[in-house]
Length: 181
Image (tube, rainbow, N blue to C red; front, side, top):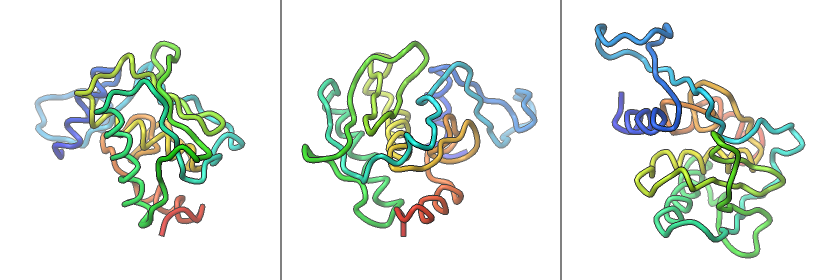
C-alpha cells in the first residue's frame, strides 16, 4: 500500500469509512492485503441524474468560506485534473460558468454538485485533511465535467476509494467525452 493510499484510508476511516480485506472480513494476521474501502453513511454528493452531470466546461469561480490552505488544495485538485486530462481543462476565475462554494450540507454529506455549483461542507474538515479534501474536490469537479460517479471501485469518481487517483476506466470515459487526450 502506498503512503498516499494509507493516508486516504486513515482519513476515510475518520469520516465514517472502514477498510476490510478483499474478502470483506478484517484480518490483521495475514499481512498486507488489497484494501477495499467501504463507506457507511458517507456521501460524496448525491447520485445525480445524467441531466445534472457535465454542466461545466472547466471554468470554476471560487466562493468565500474556504481557508487559504483549502483554496490552495482546490487549485491543486484543478492542476491534478489538468495533468490527468493532458491539457489546461480546469481553470479558476470570476468569469466562469461554474462555482466551488463552501456551505452546509446534511449530516454525513461532505460535498455535492448540482447545476454547476459544487458545494463542500468544510465544517467537518480541517486543513490537516489535505489528501481527502483534494480527493473530494477532484471527484466533484469530475461530476461537474460529466464523468459518472461510482459507489465503489478504484479511482477519483468512486465515492470511496483506497487510491485517490484516476482509474483507466475514468481515463477512457474522459476521452470519450472529449475532455482528455
